[in-house]
Image (cartoon, rainbow, N blue to C red; front, side, top):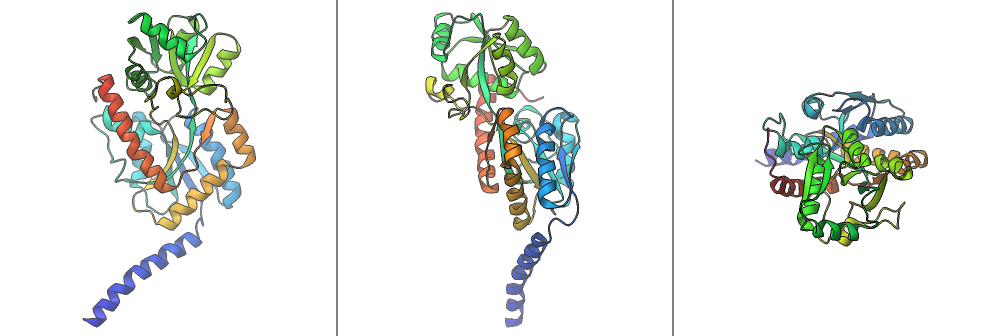
Length: 322
């Protein structure tokens, strides 16, 4: 019996020793960074980070686009991969939070089948209005919408999209009657706001800045809970509409389930190092990104909160899974 107990006591130590040894030699070969979307979106930031991580690690970090089925194909590939740190996923809440509420056939469990590594960055979101709307502040917009119920409209990039759910949360929290007009993508949505066919929209800051500089849009507030450091004079929407909280729109990294913690921590540290490199940070700032630098544990907590926020938003919007 004593011999059996000693053997049982040795097993966890051996496993821990193996994990530490794995982390110390990690990485010893190229790392795959899977982006489950077509080129031209999330992968732009991913390539920036992959290049810097390659420089820092001395091993190639190779980004691969695995688009299809709204991100389900690439995400599933990572879920099935060996949990050794050599395959990781860079994605958004669209695959790991909203899909749970919007799709009847998600081929993986976003919590059980993945290991959170790092919530790296988040595109700053702003509320914009067409330049013809006679307001210059969010307070004035809220007052105008309340004075003309049902007569103002907001655009989104599609039913169930982040911008749609933000809009529904905003108008519910502010007690406004505003018509939702969905589009197929951010481009058509923004075009109609610029043209004056729609009054307002939530949109990524970098998409709004060009139109603001041309005088076609007015940026009234950031959707984040705090002011954006690069635009400190622009209020947070929650300052004007207490209780409004933007659902998350992060770019985050996951690995397969059951990754050794030392490997997770190493990848987390390398992602944060890459994000904060001066040349990378300058480009992220220029692109209108907020930096998170989360630990794996903080990312897991943010995921939990994100499920609550999006679940509430989907209920308010009345969107049904398809």
